[in-house]
Image (cartoon, rainbow, N blue to C red; front, side, top):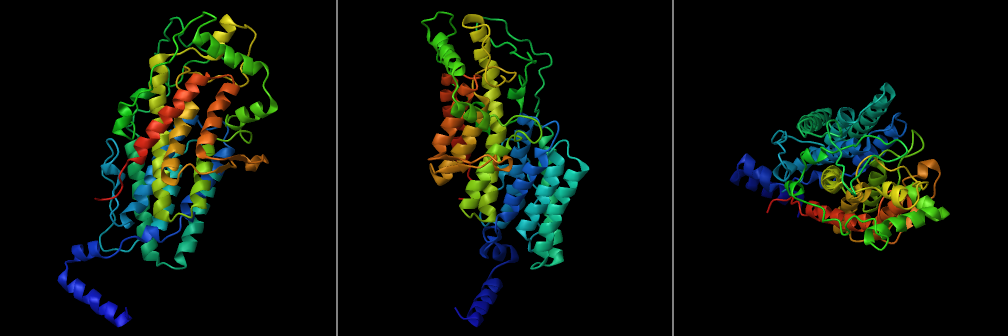
Length: 438
């Protein structure tokens, strides 16, 4: 259409519509036109910031915090996406979020940039002055880039909106009753019940996590299925055989089995391991970058995977302390071999279901539902000089992650198999969240 005709059409429409009606008629899909580099770069930076933390971040707390960060990223850009819904309409007890000024221009990348910088300082514990300087440097670098093509007024307005979202998300998070303490918890003393494990025999972690507010109302009633085998000391029982399976594997681990166990352990001191959930996030970011998503699409996927990072532990630990199942090392030391040790230390909480699989599983199921069961390259440890691991599909990667815990000597195979199904169920629930108006 010639420019003069287009101008005439717009003038005619504006004369027929009110300002609010015109705003609804005109396209508002700018996040779909902006690149997603800003969010990808922020997730990479935050990984590097916490690599050197000593002590390393608390795993479950860090997962929870990145859940909120993912939701906040989406809220910082969604008003610019035509027909999109705030997650406040979808998540459990989420308050209404700040809204941008009507009839004002925004640069949504600048909003995301400001929100991520603010949320990093609000949510990530133990930041040093040097860490905060790196966060400021990233924010300023992107603002300099934005100023090349956007007015200072628009950038300032966008920044203010992003920061208001960060504050609102953080304020909401403070009332979620997230509690990892085991103070006051009485460990059941029954045949087959969990008890503290060697070498540290540490007190239980997370018995009250089940009371934390989830993101999805469906997570309140999502339960892990019953343990398939009754506890038994009988050598012919399935429960004994499940322990013997872990024992036999642990007695003759191959180099490849050790490598798999170590790859998915994500443990160790600063500069040795990789702080959770960065293994997950590095895979997510790699996949999203390969899909060349725009800002709006990437923000939505970080939100969905963030929901999995928070609700996964809540559902998992509800099951752990419901069933209070004995760990392999305890059973094996009592009934098979008193000198046997697991390849990796056993975490201080009950066996069933699996923490890794019930958190990693739903994250990957969200990606699988969106993009199919695609091949994956896991390059999480490239910074350490380790070669990437290649998988024919997301399913194969999740299966290896599950198997790694059996090689490590800390989970039964039936626990891992059932935990994959639990993760898929939660991931499916997250994928059903509708973020578009009818």
